[in-house]
Image 1 (tube, rainbow, N blue to C red):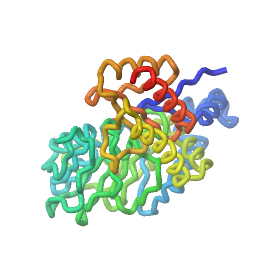
Image 2 (image 1 turned 90 degrees about the vertical axis):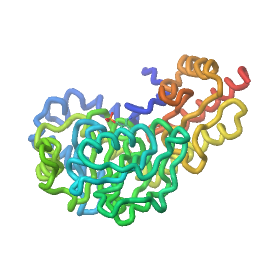
Image 3 (image 1 turned 90 degrees about the horizontal axis):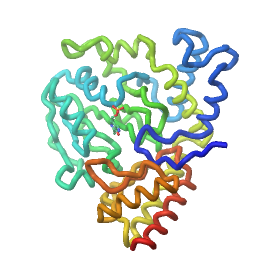
Length: 361
Ligand code: PMP
């Protein structure tokens, strides 16, 4: 009926087929409302249930304590690069750990608003590892410590959180959102664009401890960029990305059905192991990341030859394994294997790689 490919895109990325099918059946008439979720008022009773259920399911999945707000916002993860300093930089000072392009962009944006200090970086080895963050020179009066927890482009992940020395931890989890259990209490802010693991582009979810939501934002902060405005209105200050939130809600239900975040972690570890084990034994393909820092979600690899990389991507695409080309700054290949990528997809990719190696080794 459908000719679905194995989509290894870093984002927007593969979504659970079940979710897409369910959304398709509800497209013209959502639960007897006679209209699509795209067409309904965000102030309607029907929609209110959609957004409330989504929040409740996310709270259950992540075990989010009551003193944290969940905000469904717009502007992508990149808008948070500005919202975070605008709302949290009371002392106009913050510490940034730069582990890749997205952390660097957040760091550079923060410099517009105050003193952003790079306290650690892995730029010296093309961001192929996570620096030691056990004893960082964090200024006493820093408002927060910022990390990008999973580095989409480079395929690294913080396996232990940095020692913030008592400062608020702010984390971009765009590319590891809901991929494993998290202890929310360790963070002041957890946020991510949803277009990798959670839903369609256009929604960013911000989980923020209540005491960090204040009227005291930097002068000139636009109303739409104040956490308090959105928190007080339960994400309905203005028209939210309503359809996107509805799909996120379906993904949350799918995750609950899958057994929650511990179960999805096992599923993700299984997939990642298949691919990393192959890379470790292959004579042609090599992973680019220090082993202990490897991401479960994004797996970059190279052959060592630009021509072979290109040939591989081309042949893989023709065989139905798409979006395997690495980020333009790293080259080579990258397989993003988010929650919705089935084990079968990774097994078949590895079979294909083995065959390619045989023919080109
Ligand atoms: N942070 C991370 C970790 C990302 O991977 C991305 C997008 N690939 C972004 C931020 C930027 O997200 P957006 O396009 O939603 O602004």
